[in-house]
Image 1 (cartoon, rainbow, N blue to C red):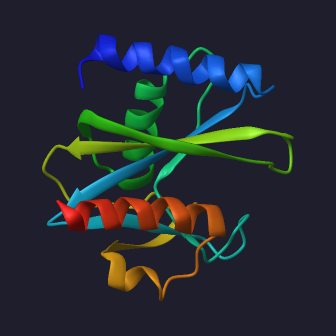
Image 2 (image 1 turned 30 degrees about the horizontal axis):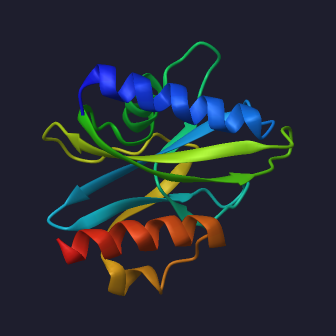
Length: 156
């Protein structure tokens, strides 16, 4: 996706969220290899501990979604984004400190490299397909997003 197209999409997504009273954002990053999706497991003593999720995290003030995608993926997995391919919907939730947060997921292509988890936030990773999804502990909204991603990938 070209940077100017991505910037336009971000403006639209931010405007839609703002009209719903949301101004805090989180990104999820979908990385596929050989039709399998990368998921990471949160450390046991963290919020949603033991649950699998897409790599990602909070968008910092003044940070673009694209910059956050690249930063979070690298911080959490050591992988570097080559480019963003698609933006996949979004869902809203509350955290301990914020009443409303909107999470958007981005499908990316990455530079060659191996996953290297940063200590403290995630303690395991898996490459999954639709069949493997059922056996993993996952929050319902994350399961819905991941299911849509792996189903769409298996159909192409």
